[in-house]
Length: 175
Image 1 (tube, rainbow, N blue to C red):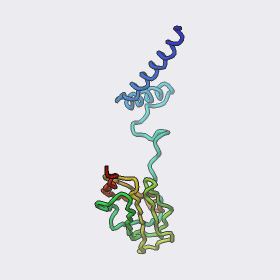
Image 2: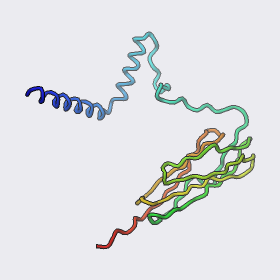
Image 3: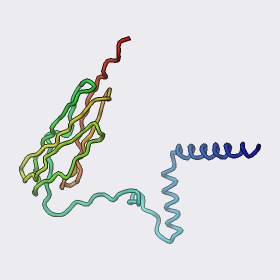
């Protein structure tokens, strides 16, 4: 009979312990202290604060040589108020103001409701191109903030385009 009470008690204690660990506001500070202590014990110098760790990617190094540059007329757009179910799109125009031909390798919407399209061919220095964002508001309501992340042979490699819309929900069935 006691065995039936011990297992739930252990499980409850484990869940309580894990929950309290997640709420600890000083966890990062304690981790940094433990990493420093571990480095000392291993005979190394203390870990440098802000140094890249295995979980933190190193900052992107700027490539050498001539680079293209995307200069957008705007990187933000407001569709204003739209109705749920509307499909709207906006074209972000840009010019290559860099020193080399520009190639867009891809564009990714922040969710499935945002579908990007872009200039597929190489854009010469001084040439223009576009990134189009199509937003389907079906199933959405209230303020919607979305992004399109463009990856190109520029530095930095990624450019984030943003848009927002206030979506008015469809009227519910009359009662």
